[in-house]
Length: 162
Image: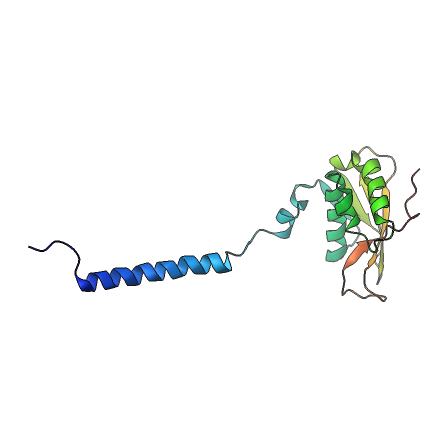
């Protein structure tokens, strides 16, 4: 009596193993798409944030990221949200120093009337008497140019250190 697999069984086994190997290799090569929403990936899901006014999605995203950076006391990350780099690092450090503690509390982000290329935004942190007022503008070359996103105006002298 013969014990073991015949030639035909070995061929089927090899075919199944090859198919499984291709499937695993395909998953590794292409990876599974990360289906987590943006707000889960970028840290905005945990914000205690209320929005007033009428932001556009791009301005809301910048405002949310600014709150995340302030909350994490991440001056470098906050400076990356700037419209232009000139003076952004210094301004971001000042904002983190002044508003980092306040950013640990709930915040109301108030968007003033929207325009084509400039948005005035106030961050009202709970327990603070004055808001952090910022200006958002397109990073692109011209009025209404959305090609490079929207950034916070952080040029030297824009922020009053008082």
